[in-house]
Amino acid sequence: MAALQGRRRLGEYVLRATIEPTGLTRRIIPCLDVAAGRVVKGVQFKNLTDHGDPTEAAARYAAEGADEIVFLDITAAPERRETDLDWVRRTAEQVFIPLSVGGGVRSVNDGRKLLLAGADKLGINTAAVAEPELLTRLAERFGSQCVVLSVDAKRRRKGAAEGPGWEVVTHGGRTPTGLDALEWIGLGIERGAGEILLTSIDSDGMQSGYDLELLRRASALSSVPVIASGGAGALEHLAEALDTDAAAVLAASIFHQSTYSVGAVKEYLGRRYPIRVGRGLEEPNR
Amino acid sequence: MTGAMTGTATPGTRYRATVIDAGVGNIGNLVRALRRLDAEVDVTCDPAVIRDARCLVLPGVGAFRPPRERLRGAPEEAIRTALQGGACLLGICIGYQLLFDSSEEFGMTDGLGLLTGRVTGLPGGVPLPHIGWNRVFGAADHPLLAGAAENEHYYFVHSFAPEGVPEESVLGRCRHGRSFPAITGRGRVVGTQFHPEKSGAAGLRLLGNYLAWAQLMVERDNECQAPDVDDAAGATGGADGATAAGD
Image 1 (tube, rainbow over the protein chains, first blue to last red):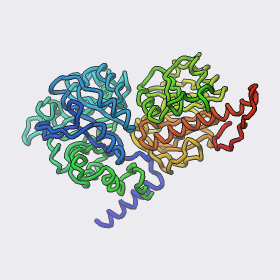
Image 2: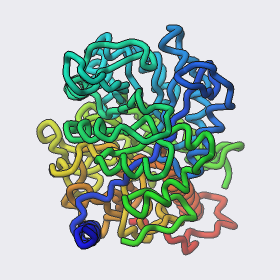
Image 3: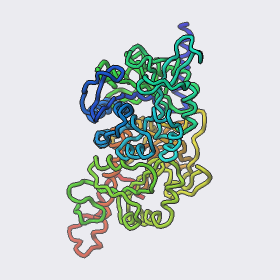
Image 4: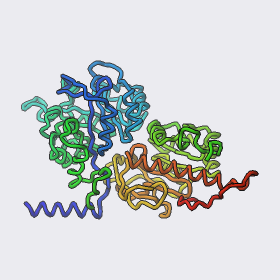
């Protein structure tokens, strides 16, 4: 077994040193929940508490080496209110890495307003389930690179009539849709999604690791990048998620609670994966 | 330097940049980045404005053909006139691809032909589009790359890239499926396949280098032209020994 691992490591080293087909790095993405223009935290979108200014939080993560920031405006879907965009504008004036904003995009015009405010990507979740054609219209208008299909997947109970697998849920897990998550991902890509943000609702907030089987299945079928989300509690969890071929890992709690800095996460993952290191950190040996 | 000189910044800002708006894609974040770097920014497709500009930026996202058609005719001629007058031009992403001779995206389309090379699809076997942070290696000694580390990472979003580019104009390469020129420059025309405005500190440094370089070229030209002006006494001449790669 040790010899096998040794051979695998050597193989990886040779691959990276000589015929590595790409220098593309795996992305580390902090996620911020925003309500009424403030960063909030809560368990399953309940008991929300104020945790400061989104611009300041995003700037701090960017300075630590975050590859992208995902904002989720959690007031948008349940209350049907227009996303307050001032915080997006302020953030785009100060943070110069890709910014993805999800929540409240129900039309091409909603998307246009968010992009003009400074978002680089639009996260689409509930609205796409209600109207898959929206993905196509957004992709035709702004390009697939702008369209991130956000999929909340819940593992079916043992003995479910549909058999094992995952169902798409919306509204933070409260609303079942009857859609099979893997089929929905395939359909969403056909419709124009340029990336998949895949959250395991069972693992979300538990900090006990990502749903690796879900990630493996999704990464294998997806022709576009899959961003792993839901369950990060330790450095090893992030590494396990990247082992599934996920293009990026998203985490919230470990960064908010300062369990690990983005820099510390990247230093750890950089030993095993191509990772963009911030200034001040050593380039991994190649 | 005085504000009266062609292309220099007005008081209160350090630089002046003219972003060519070819009508496609979101250029707000590029403008925000240039303003953050203390540039006064015009956004225009007006040939009269482009013609007189000295620090041009040509952005673009999406496909090659729509912005190409938008530039055809008067805007394109204005860009050529500005370049003949000594302007600098930075192309970004699709704006970078537009600088080359042609693109094969959706059938063959001619480019602006300001840089030698053709834009072709990246090969399969790697995920496409190429989205994310990739490293740029073999960085040349060029004002645009002052202070950049070897293997600096930048943010890419594209499926096509130039090939057949003369080695002497390649300022940095990237690998995704194949090795391609990620930064190219000839004379005062430069471009990046990646988005410097989305590439964090490394990207802002590159944009700042471009603004400073274009400004230096303006100042140098003004000094060179000074002897032709009536009150040339006190002109210092243009031999300032700067390292910029002028043609």
